[in-house]
Length: 229
Image (cartoon, rainbow, N blue to C red):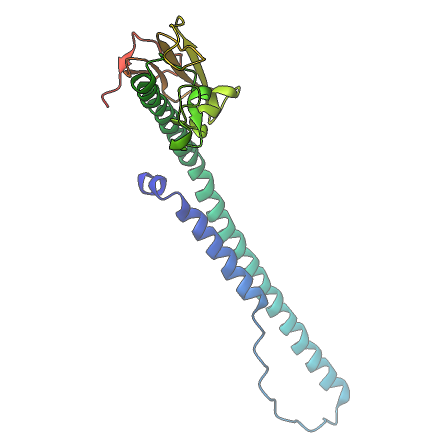
């Protein structure tokens, strides 16, 4: 199961191969009948008809038997494929949860980096993620248009939830606006990422850039365990 979990696509590929095999059997042409020897018409017509009737009936029975075996094989193959796919559903869900968890941590880390960069560059405290984001055009960077954070990292804070998480930015008190800055920043901030379903880590970070986490999916705080990286 561990091997299948790491290679969740293998059961799907096996199932598709089974379907392709069944399709090829269905569309494959029937073998051409061998030429039969021409037999003179018998004198006893009634007996001849009875013999041919039995031959035709036997041929039909064989065809029905072959069709039944094929249908049985197809059902067995489909059942095996469905069982493998059903066994993979928990692994796929776990993989998706892990990816969303990693993305949530990456979002917080990117914002911490951008906040520190903005503070050092403009001396205007910290700002909300949406204020820091932009297209990354260095020529446009200024205190009020910093362009130091990708829009994909600030967008989750404008949504009710994103990627299975709820992101919240909480600013501290306002600071005096820096030189050439029209929008004063904040003295501190906190960031949280809380999962919308159980089984995933929740995260907390602040302007110290230290990230804390919980494993029970409850909102993380500054008193929770610190991530070792």
